[in-house]
Image (cartoon, rainbow, N blue to C red):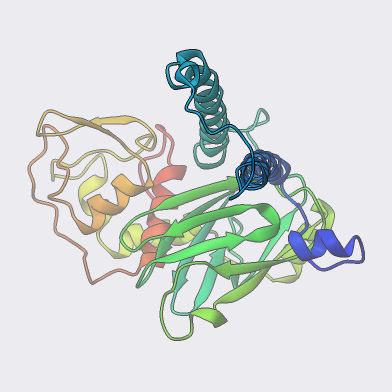
Length: 326
């Protein structure tokens, strides 16, 4: 977002507008300053030695046996450099984990939004069912988790003001969690070359106050939530015929499944997350649950990524007391 302010800051950096932005900036500037000091030291020494030992100077050029065998000098130079690199590695590793594997907020309030990238647009669906293309409306101070996949090629979700970037892959779910901290409109880009119109795959993240966001959602009209659409799809694709408790087909009960470990027929265990559910729908023979025959048909080519996300949302919403879609 371009605002009046320090021109040098606007030239060097976009506005910092998320909870992770300042931490990324601190690491970046620490590395810039450290590398700048090392470069300055090298060039100062280069200049001094160039003048002192220039052709025709009377400087003593006799090799020093003491310097050639001074192990403490080598250790004194090498160890601080090693420690410095390890500090930056640890700093970056902690920041990376907080960005790409963040803990849930203390209040548990996370707004989950489905994202589908395609040539050449961003498609969003809010938990209330509201859909957007290339614009994403959010509330300031509310933690957001994006569940993203690509309909065609590799894309990359990039909001410079938030200092976040995540590849969006076909046949795979990636997630990104962040918390906007400033109200405004911020640029959204695709940071992975994805075709001839890659440069036009842009959008805006619109951060509003919570009441303003709720008002905006209300003005979009009544829509079905992803869970409601998923329940309808669960019936229309015949899923309830096998996964209902009273079904004659021996198939896993999906109520309360999401997030739990699933023993597989090959002796391994996998967590029932969004990727597992997607693979079970499109590639059912990939991970067969232990104790069940591999008889589920594949829906590859019959169901869109958007509908898979809706089915995933419905299955995620099921509790152990729920068995049939409404």
